[in-house]
Length: 349
Picture: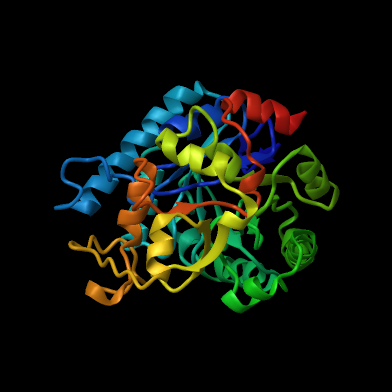
């Protein structure tokens, strides 16, 4: 598969998962199997000694390090991308750092990355927005053309069955009235077709959110997707950068354990209902003692019920009591930990 001037052996993107779940170890291993491995930039420097005193410097330093390490692990195969949320502070600086460090692609969601094309144009790095509707895809294509005279190299559609923060309203998610992935895919393909015809090139579209096995991949491709993005299943791999405790939370969860929650940043999200969320529902309040100002939309001081950054760091470090464990809707189907090689082999059949 050709994307821009780069190639993928398999149309599989490993979803970017923060904090610390998809770093160099996972992304490099995925790329080494001919897929696109994705490093999550959000608070990537949480292990750096100066993270609490200089979070921006720690994150920039760690991002450069993990991109370099992932490329070494990949051994020249696949592609290494970086997922950078629009909602993070220092968004532009993070994008520029990823490009300078040699990322093959930037994937950006949690908001509309309206200036992403301007930042990436002429660098040789691919770029892709994450969308959840035809309206967003069309708006971004128009904006990219107006501001930078380019179209996205590819697009990721994230459906309502995805993990972490979701691009749907809480009412839609609770009412189970969100449209099916394939319906959104059809609408997005229809919406971008005029742009493709004008540019005389295809914009590959990857479908995400609830993609679990080869049957899901085949169905997506049959309906026009170039490939898929998968997150949760890659958590339960040996190469995943998270603590084994986090991996086993995914392996051991039941369908009833998976809930839609309200994130401190105001967005609905999907997670395993562990002790932290139970305590919060019981009236617990755990504001950050020191705010790193990592998310622009996050309430400051004690206005947030808890610090999502600290909770995600606790999860990746294996703290079952204080951690927030994001997951996709199909997490309960994951029943064991396997190697990335075994998982990719299963997915491509």
